[in-house]
Image (cartoon, rainbow, N blue to C red):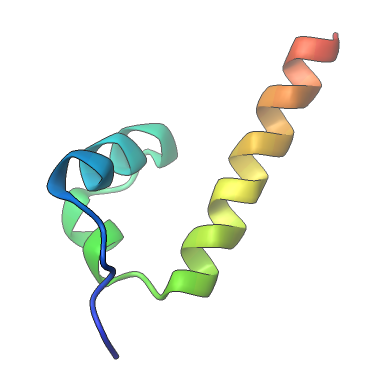
Amino acid sequence: MIPLQISAETAQKLAKSLNVPLEQIMHMPQHILLAKLAEVNAKESNEKKD
């Protein structure tokens, strides 16, 4: 498995928004990361609508 090709700054922002450790972000498979980002995005958009 290839590590994610993202910058350290991006990894820190993702870790903060997903509430997971930075190390876990760097070793997370890309498809799982994308699914988690979609969850967060859906939750935020639902909160904005309310």
